[in-house]
Every structure is written in structure tokens, then in C-alpha cells.
Length: 523
Image (cartoon, helix red, strand yellow):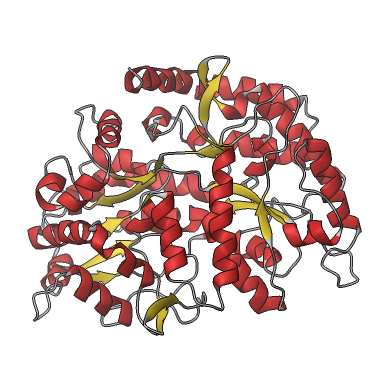
């Protein structure tokens, strides 16, 4: 958590200097020298792009993916490797990059940093640029979403400073080992009591068959993240482990301070005490938790359903086991309406540097326009022939996931502006005979997950409601209390102390802002 706080402090404290010295003013000699090298002899302009990379190779000038993007999109893409690790390391490195006056030309913002960047003039006002220079992008995002982006403008002028993600289906769900259920002759659990009995059986009855008591019934990751399935049964709005805003008793409320959250934490603490929750849950980074899933040890986890293919591929590669996962129905708890949190608004996907080098700014807009051309979506999904896919009997089929050889497909509009039917078609139309069993599981579970998804009331809310209260935005207090309650270091009665502290440390003001926002956008 300290890393996040430090990163946000850097962004807030140094942005003004960055704007004066760099993005908003004259560039220094070294920057001018660098910019003079951005155009190659073939007229291609290179731009630096930062986005999610969970371990794949970077894109360097002249590399295979660089050449592919250059040919397909007409722009050179340089994408350095920055460890993602749930976004924490990425945020820190991005803030250091900005502080050094080296802001990428196009990047994925984190933790609401786009608000500070917009106020300081560091990122481009896209309101008139997108319709004129990136009409494909402009038309891909629904008008009502652009209206909310304008309502979220931190300058209060109704401008567009970021490109939202647009998702028309529920992406997230708890995933459970169906083959373990079948082996132990257990039905799919539908109530909390049944779910606990399944976890006990996973713990005690050796479903992975190796003769060792090494199974992990369920778990998550550090900062109380990525175990949203355990909160979902209590109607707690959570998004990748971040408490969200939804209607409780008819009013927009931060889910972390609700009675629902209190009961959910009490339940999770009992799971931990009884050995049903991974003992290292609050220590696991992404790589460590993924490693437990793909080493045939975890019976239940929470994530994007459509990334199940990566876990199936790597689990088979690591252990030889062809696992079978199903969507875990949200277990029923008396007195609560459970759901998996859905958002039509994905977090902001891209912001554009307010580049005084007009050639680079135009190249960035050109990239966005061509990237969001729906005719390019399938090619961008497939990537480079021989690296990301191969041709077999006249059909393009995706190659198995291989982080050691594959460059990162950072430009993924098929994912950030997604429909269920289109995404399923991408999987099915590029599956090989060898991977069909994987794709069938993924697409079937994607469809099943829709039964339990609910779009929350706070969908699309701007991070500007947290301005002046970075600890609330970072969940600092929530993580402290949630972790200690789960570990048994605090009794559940301490939850009331957390709520009181949260309200007094800015929660009351943030709640007022959030409800004002809700009243404005829901008119």
C-alpha cells in the first residue's frame, strides 16, 4: 500500500513541474533530439505505449510485433516491459516516468491519476480531436458513455480526457474445479453451507490425487484482492478486490462500510481460521497465486472468466492434467441478494499525452482510429503469425500461451470494447483441434456467468470524488482492517471502529460527492 501512496504523491506533487517543463511547454534539448528520431525514412512515426503486461516480452523497434503494428495500423509502437503485478508496480513506474518528464504518448492510467493529469494540462483534451481524427473510436463507444466521461471531467468543463472501456456483459465469476466435484461425488454448491462443505472436502479428501494434503480450497491475493466471490454472496459490490459503490437501503453507498461487508469479513475470517482459505492469501502476488492454480492445488478462485484458457493451458503444461472448471453460482446466504459485480464502464483504457510535437500527437490519434476499426479486431487478437498464431488447414489458430517467446499484444480493443458474442466468436473461430476442449470450457462458462452478473449503481463514477482523500481511493484503511479481521488479529467488532474512522477521515465528504454524481448522471 505504501508503494501506491508514494506513487500518487509523486504524481500530485510533480505534475505541475512536469507540465511547465515538458508536456505543456518547451521541450529540452534531449527531448527534441529524441523527437527528431521518431519518424523513420518510410514516414512511420514511433510512439511509446504503456499498458497491461503480465509477463510477456516488450515491443522494441524492428521487432516482429512492431512490424505487425506498423503494417496494420500505420504507426510504430514501442512498448517497454513494466511489471504489472496487479497494477501496483506499473503505477509506481508510470509516476516515476511522468516525474522524469518522460510521459508515454499513449498509456493506461491507474487509480484515478487521469484527473490530476487533466487538471495540470498534461494529457490531451480529446473532445474535438476524437470525432475528427479517430472516428472509428468515437463511434465504437456509445454516446451515453461519452456523456458520462464528460460529466466526470475534473475541470468541470464537460471535456473528454480519457477513453473508457465498454463492456456489455459480465466478465467476472468464481471458478471451481468441476472435475474435483465429480471425483468426490459432490453436487455444485448453491448455498453457503453447501459451499463450505465442498471446501472442506477439497481440503480433506485429496481431490488432486497425489496422496498429499496440499490442496488449497480457495484463496486470493495481497491487499484482500481477487477473492470477490467470497464477498459476492453478501451482495457486496467489489471489482477486482476494490470495494465499489452500489445502492444500499436505497442510497448510493461505499460497499466497504456496509453491514454486508461486516458479515462477509466475519465469514472469510472463519474460512481462514478453519484452513479453508489459503494461509498465504494476503501475501500472494499475481504470479504466486496463479502458480498455485496452475499447479493443480487450488479448487476455487476468482477472475475474468475469459482468461480461464491461460490457467487451463498452463495447468496442463505444468502437471499434465486436463482440468475442468465451472462457474460457481453465487452461494445463497439468507437475508442477502448475492451477485458478481458487473460494469459497463471498464476502468479508463487510454489517455493521450498533451504532446506539443504535433506529428506524434497525430500519429497517436491515427493509431487509435485504426486500432478501433472493427475490421482490424480479429487481426489484433491473432497477433503475429508464428508467434501468437499459426495457419492450419487454411485456418488461423491461436498458439498456446508462452510468455518467454510472445511479445505483448498491448493493443486490444476487442477486449476493452467488447460484446459477448464477438468475444466468443474470437475464441471459437481461432481454436485448434488440440485447444478445442479449452475453448469449449471458456465460452460455456462465459455464457453461464451472465446469470449472476449485476451492473452496479456506481458504474462509471469518476475517481475525482476521492480528490483530497488518497487513502480512501487506495483503500488504505479498509485493507488494514480487513486483513487483520481475516487473520484473526482483530475481532469482527473492530469493523465498527473502521467505519467510524473512515467517515471521519473523509468518507462523509466522499459519500456526499458520490451521491451528487449519482444524482447528476442518473437524471
